[in-house]
Image (cartoon, rainbow, N blue to C red; front, side, top):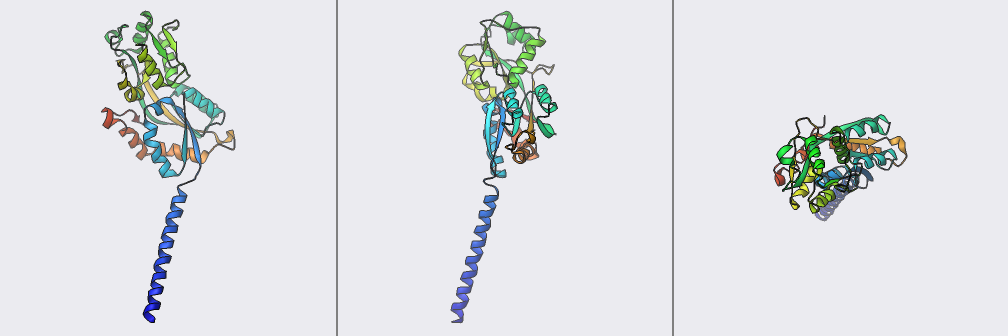
Length: 287
């Protein structure tokens, strides 16, 4: 009889222990689930390059937040921030970002560097504008040659960081592009590269998107690595000012910002693209 009682007691003890363990596991999962969502407004290049598909699942699993990505030009992303329609921004238009922060649209930490790469001028292999021959590392000369020869140039024309960079190059060259040869696409980088390929024209692209989609085209890099630094492409992350409205998820945005500049995530960014393309698509440089 004593043995039977002892067996029952032991069985109950095991049952209670298993219940506690399972309950603890359930609570642990619950603590990393259903924490809500954050809205990330970001440039199309972070999406078209494939970077977000690579790193966001890591953040979502670690934090318990779901990230809703709105992929637009940097200018439009910052407008969303100004209007309180996003929680955090990942953009690449430093001058405009400074204006955004100075305008009081960011939280108390302002803007943080995340990563950089560069822009490249791409065009058809035949290169009727002679860019690769006469301006392979001179962006101003490349744009001048394209305009002088009235070769098709496809502009993002979407107030993105790439579009702003393109406009700044025309301005520095003292040129005002217009005419049938200058096409304003009002589209993202991936679509613009496709359009440029179809028209055997030229365009300005961030290197990451080019590496991700350029292999599907007959285009090639014709101008790059301008020693003046004119083609540099820096990205920053900004939490939207939570005083915009009560719907801003500042806690989630802050966790995302801190995660993005952390050592582990910076390593993830630095590794992205190396295996497939032989080089990193972005160089991490968070301070």
